[in-house]
Length: 221
Image (tube, rainbow, N blue to C red):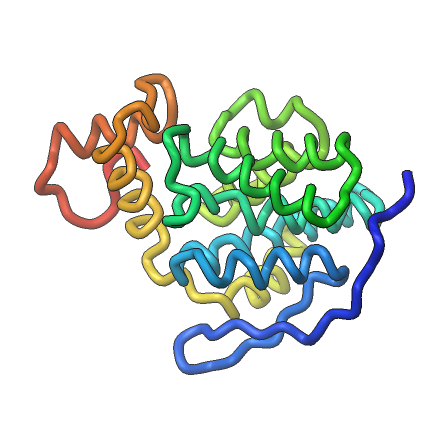
């Protein structure tokens, strides 16, 4: 497979609190994806997406995935919660809206259709336990990285946990559990079809409706 054409890319920064943190995803399309999502995502969700990439990149290197797959993995991580952003608040589940956004972005960059489909699946299935893990390297890695960022330390070799935690610490959590859960529920309240009963959004919506005055992290998160 011929890699997509690479473009000149600037150094990238993200603001975490009052500190500018330099970050690069290693290839031009991934850097462009970061620039794009940085403009639409809530800061807590953006930081979460970067942390997910750091974990997925670590796990992917351990598995020996190639350079193009690693760039596709970066794009998938950056877009995996893009469906929570206002420009992508369509009638479908937020996971599917984010996957469609990633697909449209990659088509604009002339990526080959099979690789675009892998990214789509990685984004669309990241809340689907038992399915994402069996759909190929990208969906598996994004799913595992999301779990790690929400507490699954057993997926990381104990010898690697210190350095990885140090890297993740550069991007504060900013109450991501509350921010992400509230974003998904707010969309579902406006458009209930975005939260089918058997889905993760559906569970969040049901918990919210059962306890509408509950503050903090959604009980179903």
